[in-house]
Length: 371
Image (cartoon, rainbow, N blue to C red; front, side, top):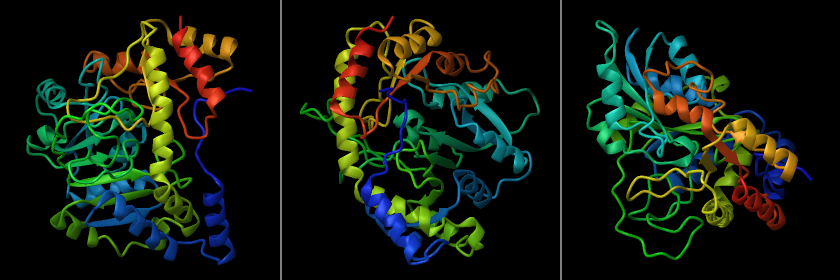
């Protein structure tokens, strides 16, 4: 049987929650959305949040809350989701594309931002905000970017994980220094995590948590939370329906179990990858990956790897950045060489809690024998 590159993890508990919401006629925004925000607060420890119909709605609301004017510049990674550019265009804001930090780390960094700002044509828009995408679950250095003096909106849609208490990573994930897949290596002291002005947690099909669609926009601090409270009177057409919120609420409660299974699979994949010449991304010192995905930067063509996986192992391997701005050809390769290169060479292997042990072994064999 074919192993798909991605399958949403929706189990019986989620199905029962959605069915209960339908039976009780809780379809539009209401009590389930409030319960979702309470469940989310236990994990994310924010000051205030809004449950919204889509990540695009959440991003637009966050940008408006910052009071940006027409033509203001917004810093964003070449590997950001494509919808970012559409939201910026709708708000008449100017994108400033920033490169990935390196070929071994896919998020933008302070250095790549500084290069992008210095490369702007004379008279172009000044940066007034940074959209910081936690690409494939990797945590960027928010503190150094925020220290540049611009507000930061973090997208934690792929980096969300189980809360681990004092000294843990930003929005969950394994403890810093842990072995891939939750090993027992002794962890070094945790690195203090800064937070952006606002954060966006997408709940789409391919996000770390899914509601079938939607997003949570939240603020960690009281001052920033008061800004979002001013947006709490939105019409119901902007708010997350209960039928989606019911599904997401159960996913938050089951988050730890799902992430533990991801860690087990990631550990097996990491061991298999040691037998191949292809490279893994390296998290920043003091931050651990949440095992949202297992990407490899290929030393051969994406087509060769995808064909080999399909024909020899009946496994679907995807381009990790096919849905990114660079993957869509929207970014100048001369300005973002690392990001554009990664958009062509980064393969994504199946990693989700629904994988059975036999399927995990098949993917391990595939990784270990890649061309």
